[in-house]
Length: 166
Image (cartoon, rainbow, N blue to C red; front, top):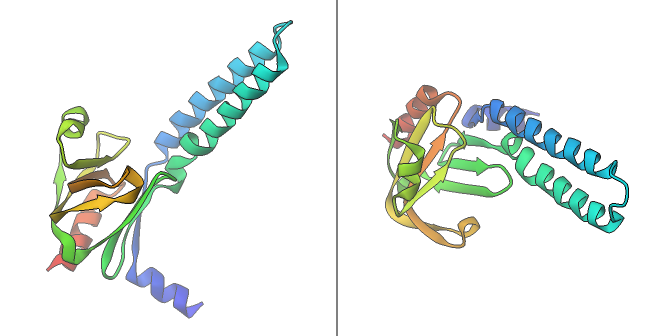
């Protein structure tokens, strides 16, 4: 119990906004309603329906639940990034050149070569600039020197990270 309390003191978690989950859940519910509507049509092959159902369940598991597993942590010696079930990385403070708040269009940001975009929103954007490009295995070993992400409380995140960088 004491170890868990100490761990929580050394780390600060910045969860993702749950609004994205609600939007994705609504989209998933619409897919489910469409699937049920197709089920009611006579003469539809059941194998096709089972295949569609399997795809819909996979969509719900990976895409819809992803925001619930998205949070970033500022640990004692690193920044831990998690983007759902698709991406996770620990970046030691020794590799970080700067962390700053930004307000740039996502599409122009994604087009810049060498930047990883881990965001589902246009608000509360934070840019992590690395000293050297680093490879990320979850992105097929793509190399990057900048990571764009969104956090729920950017001012608190920036304050904590910048204190650790000093």
